Image (cartoon, rainbow, N blue to C red; front, side, top):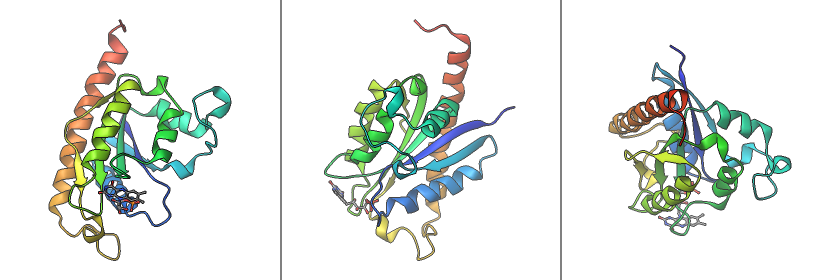
Length: 186
Ligand SMILES: Cc1cc2nc3c(=O)[nH]c(=O)nc-3n(C[C@H](O)[C@H](O)[C@H](O)COP(=O)(O)O)c2cc1C
C-alpha cells in the first residue's frame, strides 16, 4: 500500500528557536512509523514576502508539498498567547490543498503550559482552511529542559506520546482520504 505523506510544519523563524528541537524529535519519531513518509519544513524554507494566496504570491514548493500531503502536523511555539505570524503567513498561502485533510498539533513554550493557547488559537484558524483538527495534542512545556545538548529527548516517555498523536492523525488521514476519494463533496 502507498505510504501516507505527512508534512510536519515547524511554526517559527526565530533564529534561536527552541521549538525546532521538538519538531526534529517529532520528525525522527515519524520516520520510525512504517506506513508514513514525513518531511519537515518551516516558514523560512519558502519565499513568501506578500500576504495572501494569489497565484503570483505562492511558493510552488509549498503548493507541491501541500497538494501531496495526506495530513499535517504543526509544531508551534506560543507567542503572546497565540501562534507566530510567520506560521499564519505560510498557512495562508494555500487553501484548496488543505480541504478535508487532518492536522495534529504540538505546542511549545518555556513556561508550564506547553503552548496550549497557541494550539487553541490555531484550531480556530485551521478550521476556516478546511483542515480537520485531531484531539491528541502533544505538549513541550519548559522546552529548554526537555532535550540534552545533542537535541536528544531526555524523558523517553515522550516517544510514546508522539506516537499516540501520529496514530490518531494516521487514522484520520486514512478516513478522510477514503472520503475524498469515494464520497462526492456536498
Ligand atoms: C515574541 C514571543 C512571545 C512569547 N509569548 C509567550 C507566551 O505568550 N506564552 C508562553 O508561554 N511563552 C511565550 N514565549 C516564550 C516561548 O514559549 C519560548 O521562546 C519557547 O522557547 C518557544 O519558542 P521558540 O521556539 O521561539 O524558542 C514568547 C516568545 C517570544 C519570542
